[in-house]
Length: 74
Image 1 (tube, rainbow, N blue to C red):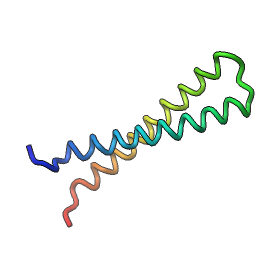
Image 2 (image 1 turned 90 degrees about the vertical axis):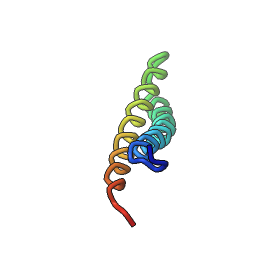
Image 3 (image 1 turned 180 degrees about the horizontal axis):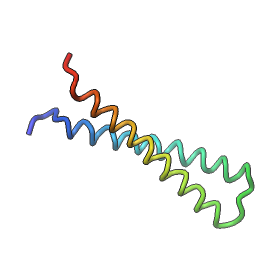
Image 4 (image 1 turned 90 degrees about the horizontal axis):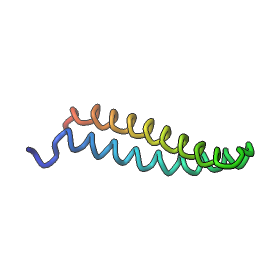
């Protein structure tokens, strides 16, 4: 397998997008839960849903961008 294979690039892109999306989602979910006064344990659920949703979307788009970029040679 090549050192810089397309699959490795797409996987790395999706992982990086997931990490960035998770961090942003956690911060935004916490802010939103406090701002809208989400009660009790629903705060944790809300923050978790926001974190996972944001990580999935960021990971998907960064992985797709890496896939598109993979075919280009410079």
